Length: 240
Length: 294
Image 1: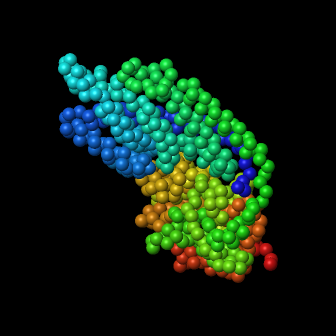
Image 2: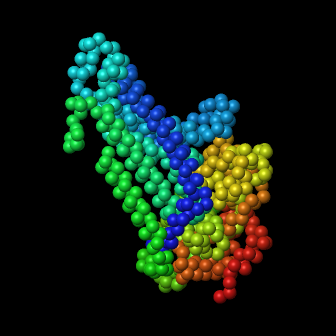
Image 3: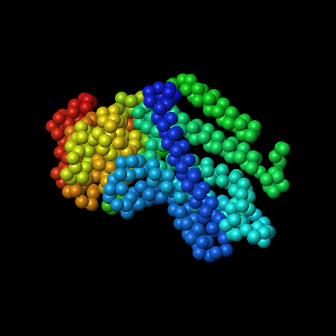
C-alpha cells in the first residue's frame, strides 16, 4: 500500500480533545439509550409472556415493528419524521437545544428495547412453569409474581445475551452521526478532515470502541458472577 | 475476570506494538506496480465519484450516473490513457464520499477521485492532485427572505454543512459561535434545511446552485453571501505516481488547449446546460494558463 503513516496526528493539534468529546457523547448517548432500552425491554418482554391476550398483542406489535426496520431509518424518523407533528414553538426550541442528540437516544433506545425484549422473553420462558405456579399458589398477584419471582431470576439468566445486546447498542450508537450527532465516529472523521489521515483516525476510533466494549463485557461478567444463584444456574467449566 | 483482564492486556499490547511498528516503517517506495500498469493489466480505470452532487456527478432522472466531472474523465482522461497504453479501456464508477475518498484511493479500491474534491495543502500530504478543473467558493443556501446574508450573520444560528468538507472547517474557524450541524451527505443536509432544523446550509456555491435547481420549488430558495473560501476542484490520485498524474494532467491540458474542455463546460454550465453558470473571464484565463506547452 502506497501510504505514509503519521500517527502523530492523533496527539497533535485538537485531535485528542475531539476524541475525548466524541467519547463522552458516545457514552452519554449509549448510556441513556441503554436505560430506555432496558426499561422498554423488561416491560414488553414480560408482557409477551402474560396470559392476558391484549397485553401480549401490544408487546408483540412493539417488538416486531421496531426491530424489523433498520436503525438508520429510525434515526431519520425521529429526527426528520417526528418533529413536524410538534407545535411550532416547542419544535423551534428543540431545534436550538440538541434535538439530534435526543432523536438519537430515542431511536437507539426504542430499537434496542425491542431486541432486549426478546432476550428477556427467552429468559422468562426458560424458567420452569412450576415456579410461576408455586408463586401464584402462595397468594401472589401476577404483578407480584413477576416482580418478586420471575424477573429476578430471568434477569440473571439473560446477562450473557443481554451483554451482547448492550455491546451492539454501544457500537450502533455510531449510526447517530447520520443525523449530525458529534459522537466518536464523527470525531474520527473530523480528524480525517483536518489531517487527511483517515487510517490513523479510524484506528484510534477502533481501539477506543474495542477498549469500551471489552470493559463493558468484563463488568457484566463480574455482575453475572456476583448475582448468580447457587444451584439454579449451571456453571459449566468455571472455577469456583 | 482474570482471563478477561488478560485478553484486554493482550489487545492493548497488540495495538501498542503494531502501531509503532507501522509508524516506523520506512516511507513506502513509489507504487509498484504503478497505476498505469494496474490499469493496463485490468483494462479498467476505476474512478471514485459522487451520486448526489449535481451537476458534477449525480444520478439523473433517467437513472444514469452522469455529470461534469464524469465527462471530463470519459472524454479527456480516458482517450489520453488509451493513447498512452495503446488499447481501449473501460471506466468503472464507484461511490465515494468526503470521509471515504482518501481511504478508497490509498487502498487501491479506486484509481482516481473525480467528483467535487477541493485541492488543499493538507490533503496534498496524503494524495496528489491533478490540475484544477473547476473554481468555486463557499456560500449559504437559505429560505427566501432569511436574515442571513453572509458569514457575518450566522452567530448563534444553526448551520448545516457536509461532514468532511472544507466549508465546515472554515465555519468552525471563522464563526465559532454558529451552531454547526454536520451531515454525511447533501440530501440529509437539505432535508434539515427544508424542515427548519437548520437556518442555512453551507457548501460550495456551485453545489448549492445545483441543489436549488433540483429542488421541488427553486424559487423558494436563495444563495447568499460572498465566497468565504476558495475551493479549487482537482482530481485526486495516489501519491508519488508521477506517470499516472502526468497522464491525467495531459488529458485535461489537451482538452483545455483544444477547446474540448470548454465544450464540456458549456454542456453542463452553459446557457442551455443543466445549471447555467457562465465561466468568468478570470477563470477562463486561469484554465488556459494551467495548460503548459507540449
